[in-house]
Image 1: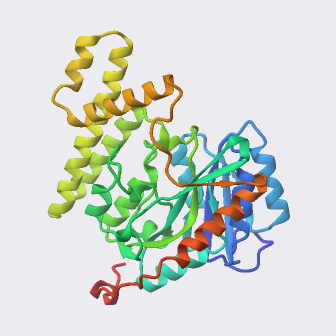
Image 2: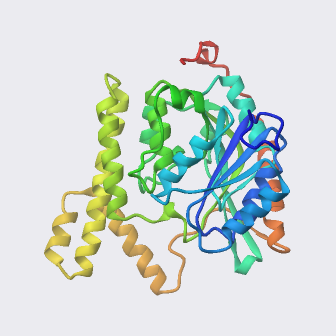
Image 3: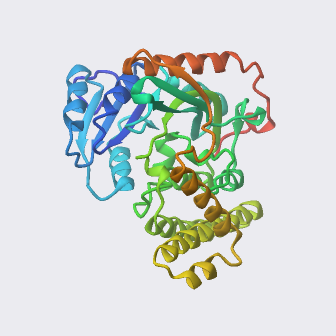
Length: 371
């Protein structure tokens, strides 16, 4: 039965949103979710103790649309809130939408089609990464996964998924993509978000799905709109974050089994995370004027040295009032705040139309999917 008695149709997809003090962005995010061409959806908002107008805005959407439900969060961190939303989902599939991001109206429709064609338990679309600039008068947007290799639908295996998701790697990291998840698969394998993690929680869950036998399908159409701004959790790292990621990696190492390619990728990720941790420790040492300790931490660790070079370069650029690096994407003038989503939709539609490459036929597409 539908979780909301006012809704007579069982939803195909539960759109899951966690929110905390998202008053500036949640209204647009919920409107984009409600405008999906697939109407058999529910939108589950878990508010985790907001002190702004987030609860009131979410409740206004629930009053206007019976498909929207607003629930209180457990106040134990992001991953715990994600798990609360998974537990509340009434549909067989769950789609992650962050409270500061937006969806193309056909996002759910296209992901359902890609999932059905591939028989995948995890599916994710390409994204447009965007930032609103000049006080809302301009929009900068860039395709997240760029290049010919990302212009076609494709499966992503566990080793590729890990190898492409290194901190500071500079390439396309599929761990940032927001997945459509088969909840039956998750429940059958006892999978949920690792509540030790404040960041990288989607990456960790998807990796464990892949290691349990899930098939991951990437859809090249950029129908998810990912907002870049200084407050994004994904743009901040601290020691506790990295420690949690290393603990999660311990579990992945133990479960890798005889998959040599995956084992190599996990080993490289450990080097990457350890180097990032040493970089943070060296920054702290420099701030404390513990010069010898800072140099010792950087010595012999190319990851830490590369990240330090990037930090110094960005710090100098800020002091000089210069951009740290050229901002990716094209810039577009906006008539107002309401023009952000239409502009992104038009950009996405143009990119979809300009991607003529056909979907390749792989032998794996004709194999039965593991349960």
